[in-house]
Length: 380
Picture 1 (tube, rainbow, N blue to C red):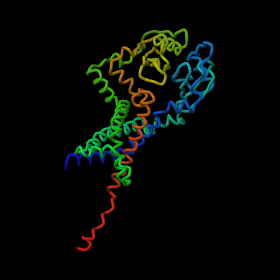
Picture 2 (spheres, helix red, strand yellow; picture 1 turned 60 degrees about the vertical axis):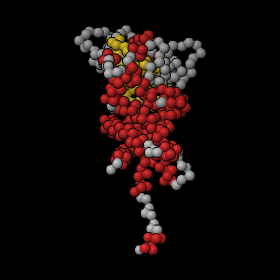
Picture 3 (cartoon, rainbow, N blue to C red; picture 1 turned 135 degrees about the horizontal axis):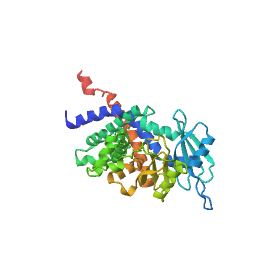
Picture 4 (tube, helix red, strand yellow; picture 1 turned 135 degrees about the vertical axis):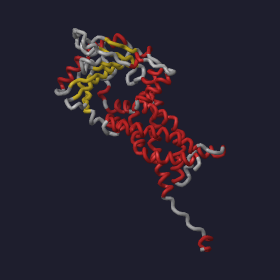
């Protein structure tokens, strides 16, 4: 068996074993790419009108009180404060641990929208993309293994596609639209797969960084030239033996005001709330709304509200900055609208590859036998 035939067998069986998962993950990834744009177009409550006269935004404790008063039985878990022209979102949980999102006007406290995230379309798409709607540990591993296989298939596909002779290159780079459907399907699989390979590989690798800590740590170490910086990766501990007193204002407001002082230009804030007196409260200040790269990170004491540790973006290593930009790379938004379009098309083509590949295999298995020639019949 030649090397290319062995690669072809590997490509075939890996494709048959992972094709359905790759199709689902790629298609849901394409849908999720423009989730912010689609939400803005269909959910008017995501944006608010900025008051003509300077008006201070309501403090988190007030937003929390209004939400919990309006929805008895729900308890605030964290906030997303999206900026001056966007609603403030309070995320809550019920006793069963189900999440809800309540959007409020940050200036008046008026409730603008309320979502049960179990029924939210893009939340379902995200869960399908990441876990196939299975339990997180099981679904995450199934998706992770399928994406690992997909990376191998991209490499083996390029090896199989690579033309032997220079004269074959033009044919290998173009789709012969006027040919029979089997040939068109073959070209769609090979040619589109080649053109999308680099984008698909980037999407797959950034997805693996979310699925597997060992992939994230490997990228981190390579980006830092083998150096590790534990200070930026290790959260502080809470000294439970130390006697502390609660701040004079609610802890959420204390966290928020300290973040505002530390990151005065931040447009979006993820604000956590205490879950245990033994665990620090984690919060993030983002330089731009709906972009997750440029971030300052904060850890607070859950009782006293004291700042335990801050990690400004400017102090982070190259490896940590790459880890921070991973989501924006995965969705294409690191490069703006053009990047999202490229990620969308790359995801669609990735979703098509298992389909066209299966049709190539099925067509070869069910290829009609050639009719015997007249000479063979005459000789019989």
